[in-house]
Amino acid sequence: MELALQFFLLILGFVLLVKGADWFVDGSAGIASKCKIPALVIGLTVVAFGTSAPELCVSITSAIQHSTDISIGNVVGSNICNILLILGLAALLHSLPVQKNSLVLDLPVLLLSSALLIGLGIWGHALNWWDGLIFFVIFSAYMVILVRGALKEQKKAKELEKSVPQGEIAPSEEKKPKGKVGQWFDRMEQKTWFLIVLALVGLAMVVGGGTLLVDAAKYIAGYFGVSERIIGLTVVAIGTSLPELVTSIVAAFKGETDIAVGNVIGSNIFNILLVAGAASLFYPLTFTTAGTASNLIDACVALGAAVFLYAFALFKGHKLGKVAGAVLFACFVGYYVYLFVI
Image (cartoon, rainbow, N blue to C red):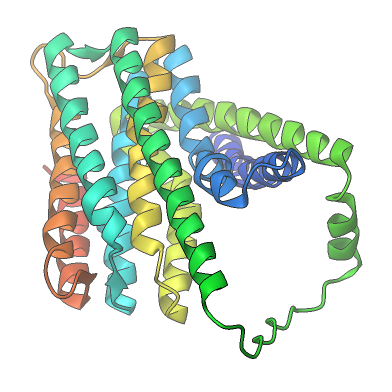
């Protein structure tokens, strides 16, 4: 009976994490918009942060409870799932284009971050608070470059629009009618106080969901005699990556793939620099211990996945095709065989 309750709490934790992050993003983005912050900046910061909120909360909660294997496993496992599982399956359904900006900025930053995670982890056998500060410095520099570049491109696009003669205006896309609840929600989102409440409630749901998830995962791991590292790399990692998984698969199925790869790369960068960096400020995240290098192996798999992604992106017209998808997914299956069999 207790085990069934813990599985229920685990699922409840996932639901609270995902929906809470959604509400937090809606509320925060609405507040930022009312403060006259450009929509582009909101998308690159608030929304991007919101998609990493589940991983951030789980890793920080795990670090506070000294369950560092769950914290590290969540970060590394999510990155492995994002590339090998999510992009692998999505590429099998539809060819995924890789944007130029991802090739020249995002992917190199991801490779650097992945290598740095391994290097700092080996150096001190753990990620300490000063390592977290290093991650934050790199993350801040990356965000400044990202936002400045995006604003520059936006300015060029506006200037180009002004120079082109105005022709027939394309009709706006037909919006699906909403029910009474949807209409009420749209009206309330115009009120600042509601946006603040929405953001706070969403944040509370993320924190509460993360706590439930970590506690339940620890109990289940102990009950079945499975290490917290395995739980972090599998159940927790896939659970916190569910929004990206569902979104990418649906987008690939519909052929809407323009930003699928970029979103995954950005999420992986956030996981290392922001999530691991923040968690290490609360408690040292053990990376290697005497007689075992499990976390090191997992981190190397995550780095290898990023290298594979970059290599595939450089060929075939900078697209991930079915061959790339098959290789990535096969690597994911092989990695999980290693986790549970070897």
